[in-house]
Length: 423
Image (cartoon, rainbow, N blue to C red; front, side, top):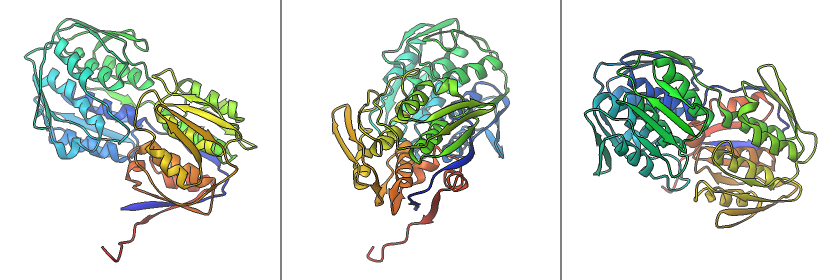
């Protein structure tokens, strides 16, 4: 096990580069299963989740090779159809192989996934959508087992604009017979990225970027080369970090059109944000002002930003209300912030944050990817040293997090957690 040691007091300044989106590339890797042959993905982040998904694909019979930011996936004519529990339990995105495997193989056996401990994220909409497309789906011994000789197009209404369900149904519908309409579909940039890759493979999709997607199924798809969309959550993390530390950071690769609401909140907090060629600059000269946040599906304020803005508000001037509408268990992070001296009270979906001039370094634990990043940012503005443990969560979503912080002037290092002599 490893931990981060974060010394407070540094002002972040310089340039940081954002790579491809974790929340997109894992689904693009799954989409490669839809076509026999070599699919090439570029701008792939060097993160733990990509390594795990690559192994998931290898066990399905694919050859996966990586060179720098490029991943090549060679898919056999008949992939294996079972995704094992020991890997699937580690990342929730592995459920994205369900739709492609049913579409290509007529059968899929996928272990129920794991991932971040941020609340219940059922698969009911995935299952109901596949059943609408003609699949038989059962749950046995911790596995979802789906089968269909050939999927058929159908009208599917999602009760909630679930990103995962939208992605699985898009991929399944691409090879279904007839036309599928997905209503109340998710609209995230990562969904658009998947649609663009599927279209390049030969899929027929209309309504891209809207809440109604229409997919006309085709007999087969072809492998392609595709560049992964930039990671808006990582870009937003660096923007929040610059604001919290009263810094001056150029976020290269960040796309302001994907970050309108969080960047607007940072402007309300007092930051000056200037779009530039290839990214945007964030400059903050004073203590941030408190900003209220309400999480909603895209284009609303993304739930992944909530821990970051909660952390920002702990050192802001004034009081803020944070409302979490997406995941019911994302307040586990609050107890760790309180250990740093934050004044946060939770009540149901709401958290009230009263800003303090400074926090105090202490040992804390990262429970998920964004909470881990948020704790590191809080440590940057705390007196003394903050020890952040369980940093494998951060590694799942951020490429070279410590190295990039150090390059911006932070005093952060990674170290092995020493063995306790009494164990």
